[in-house]
Structure formats: structure tokens, C-alpha cells
Length: 449
Image (cartoon, rainbow, N blue to C red; front, side):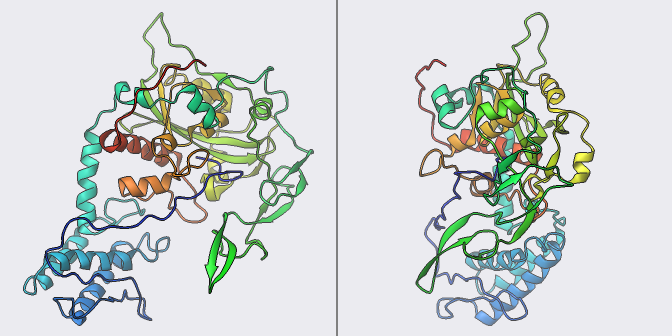
């Protein structure tokens, strides 16, 4: 997971939706609106529609009712989904059908919806229109059929200069490290509200009132305002969220003082090495008296099979301030399962990772920093799918996955947060997609560390 706070990352700019191909007949395209009962309302040009609008509206309502039943376990988190998909499904049918076949085609679409298994998340294969599901299934087959080899990834491994640009730590900072694991009792600047505060463990921490979203410029009735993504309140209104004062550090020397950095291990030469050629990795972080610290790490192999997933307890003398559940997905119950410290987990990761392993991730420098891991063979999707503005800006993982894979991730709701397993698999699939569909890599000049 990428730290949400103290970030220069901006969201993905809106992109235009375009239709491709030449339509065979005049198409009346609906726009999303609702009746007072919540039924999606078909708005289209009656003169351009080959089917009477009252008939189409009745079919939209029927589709909406069946999508509501199908999505009953996810509709609370995605309230507009049944309406959006009902309109989109009706449009798919309308574009292909004639006056004689339209009604039966809608009935067949409804029958197909009724046969689908109920989804438990918005990224489930059952979510979507019939064409979307078929298209995703075909793309999924192509992706899964691709066996990623080191030769696919070698051209995309970040050069030392690229790693520096993206903020990777290439060598351990000077000193033994781990000399000051906790700042409990010290005065630090709160990452959330910007005020100085005394660092205290969760049970004693002082309350912080803040916005968890980012401010952006919005224009209403010709007036330009700065509002927050979390609550749409302006920057001069009361913050929307209560929590604890926390602090965040990014300087490698500060991080090294909390827990020492170290290189990944060398390859075994005396006996067969258990390390894999390729892994995808993702972490979730929480706030502690030692800053933001890793609390979960997940690793999958090149096929997407989960090979490691553990919760991590804080080092001795380091206490939790805030689980940051909205973004980390870590709950007190999860943390209670943690038995391994970071040092122990690093030794466990040695089974799968050595200096030759290619590690895939999204904003991977953050994961490696929180693991205090120094590794030089990295493939990062922020570089494969660059932001139009260039570094340090990057596109969010969920937007890339939605755009290129047609999937929705990190959609567990406002208090559930991310899953490092889901994110690592999604990142791996993005790399698969890029190998199949992305531009051919240019040869890289050799560079010395």
C-alpha cells in the first residue's frame, strides 16, 4: 500500500469515453437519471429511438430490479451500480436488436443475470453487463495464459537513476540503525492537522480533527472553491474526521534510526536456492510511536498464487497510535494475530527473495522503505503507466486497474481499507497487461550505482 499522507501524488485526470466503430443505425444513448423511487430514468431522443421510449423504460426498470437482487450484498457500498448497469445493459440490447427482437433480447439478458452467482465485491466476475463480462473473461484468459518470464521484465527493471527519481533507497544510511525506534513522549508535527503534539500510544493519544481526503479546486455557480474529496467541505469549514495525532517520516536516515535498512540476501551457491525469479509484493502500514510502520506484507508468485501473507507486530518499545483502517484495512483484531516482528518477517521473506529476484509493485519504493529492504531489481507500475505530468506524480493503482483490467479494487467501503493480497495480484495483472498491450521497451543504457 502507498502511504496516503504526505504525498505529492495527484489523482488521475478524467478521461473521455469514446465509442469506436461505425454504428449500423441511429442510436438514442441514455443518460443516467432517477425517478423519485430510485428507478433509473431513460433519457433519450424519442425521434431517434427505433423502440418506443415507454417500452424501453419498462425494460430498464425490469433490468434494474434484477440487478438490485443480484447486487444485494454489495449495493450498500455501491448504491448506483444497479442503475448504471441496468441502463448500460439496455443500451447493449437496443444497439443490437430490432423492433421484433428487442423485448425477447431483454428477457434473455434478464435470464442471464438471474443465472449469475451473487457477487461479494464490486470486482467480482458477476458484476457488469453481459458484454462487459464476456470481454473481461476473454481478457482474463489472455492474461492468465501469459506466463511471465524474467526475459519479459528485464527491459522494465528500473535503472539506478530511475530508482533515485522515484525515491528508492539504494544503500543503507550510515550508522548501525535502530538506535531510536520510538518517539514516545517527544513533540512532533501531526501529519493530519499540521499541529505540534506529544507522541503518545493509542490508549493515551490526544484527539485530532482532520480531513482524510485531499483538497481540490471546484467551481460552483461561477465561484471557484477549494473543497475536500472526503466530505466536499471547503478548506475553511470544520474538518470531517476525528482520530489521533500521528506523524510520518520519509527521510531514509530517520527511517534507519527507527529500524535498520539492509540489502536482500545474496543467492546461495552451495545448494539449490529457494528464491523465486519473480514475485509481486505489497504492504499495509499503520501509525505508531515510531512513525508509519508496516503491519502486513503479502507476496504472490508470477502466476498470482499467494505465497506469503502475514500481520506484523511492532518492534519492542514501539506502540500503535492509529491503525489507519480506512486505508490500511488493519483492525485491532487483525493486529492481535501478529506474532512476527519485522526482523522475523524479513528472514521469512529470504525464502522467496534474493538479490536476483525481480520484485513487482506499485509505488514499490514505499513498500521497500517500510520493510527497510534495499533491492535493485524492481519493476514498478508507476513507471510502466506514467502520469502525464511525470514524476513525482503517479496514477493510483485502483484507477489503472479499472482502466486497463476493467476491475474495481480497494472498494471495501470507507472503513475497510485495502488488501495487500488483492493489490499485489492486481499489480501483477497490470504488468501482464503491459507485456501484452503496452509499447515495446526501449533499450536502456547501462548505469552504475
